[in-house]
Length: 317
Image (cartoon, rainbow, N blue to C red; front, top):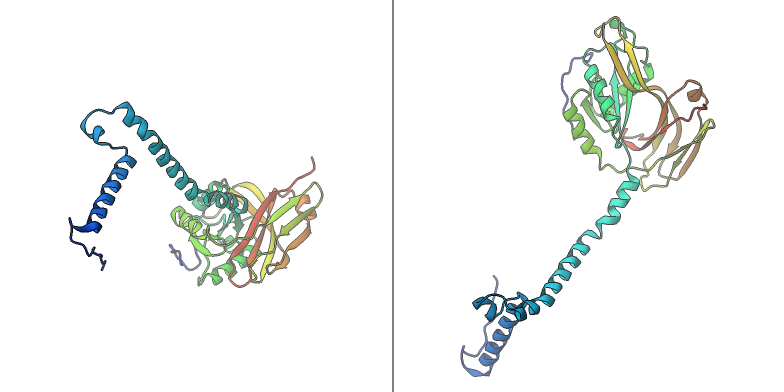
């Protein structure tokens, strides 16, 4: 749904041979060549495990025993080639598993938007994946048509406008998903979203480590990186799920659920490739009962996500 209606968006981005001087069949060179040829043929047949006897009759014990060392040699060679082929891949897989970072998907939605429920439901499926960090931002520009969204924040609308402008879009709409700050897709188009996820998986990422004990502070640790572009560090507080019975507006009479609902977002630091360790107070988030928080590193220039992580908040029992 869009103030300026837009129903679809696409993702953009002479062999030569030498001859012997002797004539065939004459001279010393010819005899030597014939002898070498005969010897080579014999060795070749032995290598393949084929003898004159084996060609004429059933396999004999002596023939089978002569084949054993040949077969063992062939097996050893095959094993060696396989080992050499896969050995460089083993540490690569381990490194990929250790350095794996989630793809950040931001859904811009509204309870006053009749086109949004399929996207809201899809977000509920996406956040079950280990490779996805999903965040739902409720916007406020549909509140005027009969139902005020309780989770809408003007800050969310401002963020959507900024990211959309960076992506070259001339207007904003719902439901919109922005994948890793780099690709735009209609939130209800699962195929487009999956294609965008695949497109951004190979983007360079910086690891982000979060530590939260039972106190009121979160430690954010970011190692030094070859990436030197200026970026902002944000902390985002969200609730796992909210279900609302909507009484007016385009979704009147429906009971809808929303996942990883963003309730607050703050800038907590700057980063340009150096190692960083920050301690961020969580007093407000803890007091408000927020379920979890995410930390993202976002490029000032492009808006792309350079690193991200999420963590559950440990509430005192």
